Length: 319
Image (cartoon, rainbow, N blue to C red; front, side, top):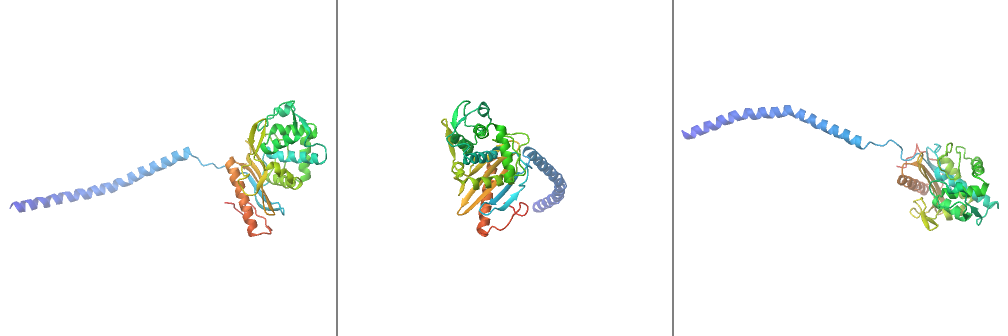
């Protein structure tokens, strides 16, 4: 009897427990959507918080670019190449062009002592730290302009070549017309921000091409990584020098309103490329995109040695 009583007790226990467990499972199923909603709400609010903390920038990494095979004048790549931007220190390539031209005409000489004016002494930005009244050889000032982008040297050289800055700027804009730089205007010899001063990547390429063809010896200075004056050692901002095979020039620049610029040239064998990158968001992007342009250019030329093609930014992606 005891055995039957125990069995009956077990059966009753099972009968009472089963409905309660099934009901519990049903209740869990009913509650699950609410829980899921709460989780999804939590995730969406978390995403919202993350997006507020780290918004994606919509600004382009570079404003414009262009690449040319200097050996035959073919354009290999371009992107917004006619977009007007402030030139920054790329301006100094034009100033150097006029200085070497005056030198070739016998109007000025490497050894000329240049008297530093108060205006040159007061130039802002990158400097050689020349002092007003100091007499500095023209050669020393040209090296300062070329290697460390000295703004004070640029003013001193302009005054020496043309008598004053205004006349030198007139020569700059006249030379733009002669070279076919139809979308450029300059207001000073060093590229410091000035109203009405602008250029394009295409015009900078035109300038660089003419400059290197006319004064190839200038690369001896453009390829210098450091320059010291008054025991102050300063570095060339062309970060591709000695770090990319064949790079031996040309000029970097920065102005807050436009970004970071670089004209870079590299030679391999008989082929020389010129790349212009303008308006990069930071120096690292400037270097990366310039390197990418040169990589693309040399790769394209290794595939088609003739270089008989034009690639536009829309039709060809470097990425």
